Image (cartoon, rainbow, N blue to C red; front, top):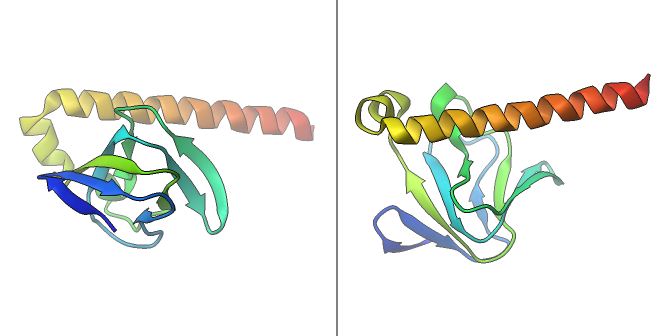
Length: 122
């Protein structure tokens, strides 16, 4: 499981689950080092290894259960964030900008992948 090396920072050993599909809340994460896999059931659907990537934010923003497991693919250090969206907008607008850009990039990637799948099918 995670340790509390410093406030807000959590380190996860390889193969440990960072966030469980179906759980509600629990905040979100900023990748500081390592790699994180996103798993739907037993299938890896994404991988993040870039410092500064934001993970697990959809559940926090929407107030819905998590849609996937986040798993440390190697020893991984994350910044854990508990602020809700209103707090972020009011007190940390630069973080909100980073969050919006991250979501837009992921939406673009998903849209391109969907369009490519449709081309292959037809």
